[in-house]
Length: 431
Ligand code: ATP
Ligand code: CA
Ligand code: CA
Image (cartoon, rainbow, N blue to C red; front, side, top):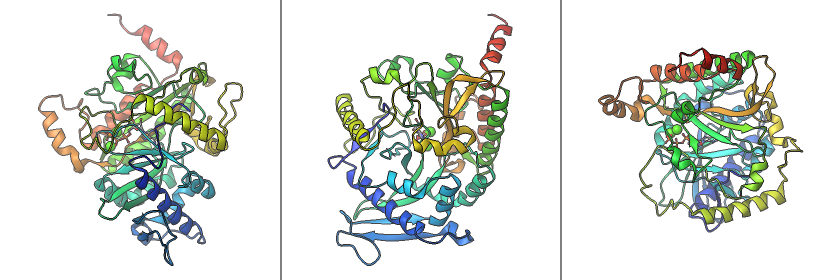
């Protein structure tokens, strides 16, 4: 694998937190799964259960390495969501077992969130702010109903909402969600698109030192890229985008983006084998300042990362071989279960098509991420300040209606087959 973070082992500053998260998840998920399935009730959406773990264990919780408290939110709703997203219960637990290491991703973004991959890269644990946590609980029913009515939703798939706390430590809220990117395919380019242009530029010069950085709207436009879908795929993709954005607008959500990972079948995974340097994925990326608590969030050096990545790769190789070479383009089992979903059905992603709907050369791994920011939370102030200097529609924090329209508009106008894009280019008046 190329996209690996820092292995979280016993020496890692966040080892205890990661261990507690996984131990807690394992306990609460098994606990809920052990019961007979039943339909949801209203109370399920508000439910929360608190557990205390300690080194001796008690009649309710097994013994753990550390003392900590764990809170589980709406366990039945998430159990049903996992079923809707077709996760295999045993497999989910396997992936998130504390026996295995997670890896932590780069430095935190503007939001200060941490990201952890499960060992097999299928799941991401994202720590979230208390406000986002409260908001997810508030919209859980709308989200649930949306997933029910839109099995192919492009929104982040949430599998669990929990909280951990160590004695005298602060409360850490987190969600478990899908990793959009596959374990078995190299992602050659990544874009995080919002449909805004202000501040949406990754410095092209910095690409040299970080060739797999997540690029933004202006980088996309500069490259003249499109989501290359023929008429059939364009139609299903855009109509799902519309459905999803309608929900986000109605819930007054802002600041989300379309995350796009592009795998070029012609390049395949070969590059991988030659490329020995590690690409540390840097979430967020809109922040320029140093993380405030940089002692705690020390960004590991490149060498350190490379060494840890090698170790991690070795471990993964031993435990579950992942087909790497081009000749065996076999999908790992975990990707197979995604085949039921429109946008994750082509080898875990959504393959480009030509104008005649014949398959193209790219596979897109995409979804709408970071969708827990409510307009009222932090954007009002920012809107006011930025509004003084920039045109109202171009800044990213505009009210949710406008945000959604601009987002949709951007994605729609950037979705067309290669052939169509070519024609459009030629019919444009030359400068
Ligand atoms: P900010 O609020 O500053 O944008 P954040 O901490 O809320 O940052 P996100 O926007 O959720 O972080 O994600 C940051 C980056 O992490 C994304 O650009 C993407 O590269 C990666 N990422 C987030 N979610 C996923 C996912 N589900 N699958 C794969 N990568 C992801
Ligand atoms: Ca974001
Ligand atoms: Ca965010």
